[in-house]
Length: 273
Ligand code: GTP
Ligand code: MG
Image (cartoon, rainbow, N blue to C red; front, side):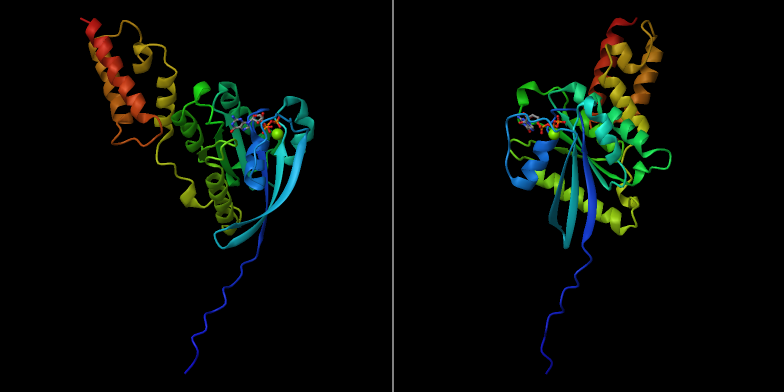
């Protein structure tokens, strides 16, 4: 009888990838990388000068990957040094500090810098982005909440993780998911697989949530002019309620936005004859 010899597992070619970190100075880019690669945290701020480069081997699913990490300096002073490093990148770790609203608002400018450096033929679509909302251990100073960060990331098809380089929370999970998405991208010939592109909510829903979050008063929330009639208020309310109803809308922050819309209508109708 033939022995039941298990088949030798086919070893797939190991992958080499390039990953860069982006985000304002002092948000914790270097500490996130250090926490993952060296399992330690350095409380003292040592600004990255230009670029720090490192190579690490990691095992993700059944694959071994060799990761070339280019950890960029966030300070504007180093623009001339880091601008050469954007090309041929498969993954970007985009970091902000949840206690520094400026660093969150700067994310668009970081994407714009990368886009500009890649030039007209560069393809940002086929890069895996992971957004790290970092320093979540500093709960007292939090100024960007989870739904706001998640909405920004997911409406662009980016991954989103809440992290703390200090405690290690979210760091391993973030890197595993990030590398896994890069493997899928490489296995798909360098193109983002279709399954990872859909976000489950529309741009109209994301824009409405953002607009409501930034509204000053109830008129603003419903998008009507002060002095609008009951009919106008009700019409605007119905449109937003359909768009944002939690049964229909899965966008981060939709529940709060929906509540704000209901409250705004109630407040306005009390005062309109
Ligand atoms: P540049 O290299 O200048 O662009 O900064 P960076 O983004 O690499 O920041 P770095 O990792 O050097 O961290 C900046 C400061 O924030 C340091 O003092 C870190 O100790 C601190 N820090 C980083 N991550 C965390 C975190 O998750 N929690 C807390 N409490 N502090 C953190
Ligand atoms: Mg650094």
